[in-house]
Length: 70
Image (tube, rainbow, N blue to C red; front, side):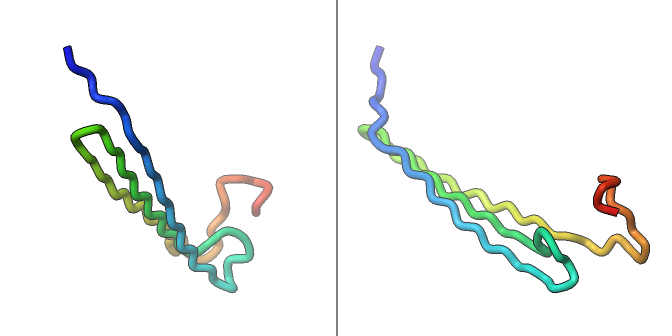
């Protein structure tokens, strides 16, 4: 049975955050990009994952689900 030796793992992450003056804490939008690469003796694998988070308009008089934030 042949097993391959793990040679190198690299993970790089970038986050971009958009803030808005009407939102005193937190963010209006965030994009997080994670790039991973794994090298074996004879093979390489790469993956890119992008996650985007946005606050949507909840309407006038919206209440937080966390009572301490209302």
